[in-house]
Image (cartoon, rainbow, N blue to C red):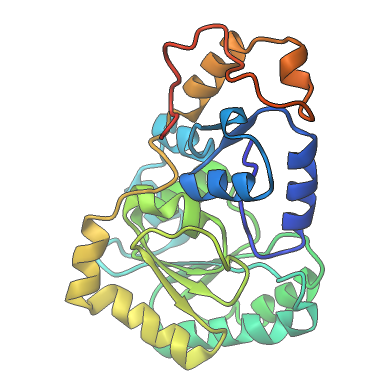
Length: 274
């Protein structure tokens, strides 16, 4: 699953190594399929099924907006910012300063914002210390961990997602939500038209948030954006592939020339794109 993805971090080396061991690749988008081909994987071992996280969105029972507003204390009539920023593994020493720049941008705008803690990668403790220092601002609500259901429910109604979370690339387009993507963490990933990329600098971040909220041309592009990572039916396609996979020597022997096809039922290949 998810071979050929690119996240601009040390994860890519691990992912590519695993892909060389794999016999069948179920990819999330055409760009990932192309990377696997460039790695030397055979085309008939690669099937595009879409991003599994979108299945979660399609089937989720979201928390009601008014319930979220009561719990986190924001006004549904005002723009809401959701901020999630993680360390960059190759820029650990800059983690605290990068978090500071994002929070200073939020302070310059003084809009209601929910700020989550980062993941536990190296540099996260320094970022958490910075976040806690800003927690007394009346327009900021610091929530260490929201959980998937609340996080996606907030993303569904937020005006802008700010930071460098992969959710801005993978899930936000399904909600047609604007994303201000800060820094290099998502470098190289396929983007929909909802993303504005900026360096980790407070003025650039604040200007991008203003553009996401007020720029008429961007708002129109946002309204019509399509998620390039699929339609929320990755699980169905995956199950069908596993159900019809022919476990035979030709499938295992990657070092031999392809005999063309590894499915018991070749008439239908859900999600496969030419």
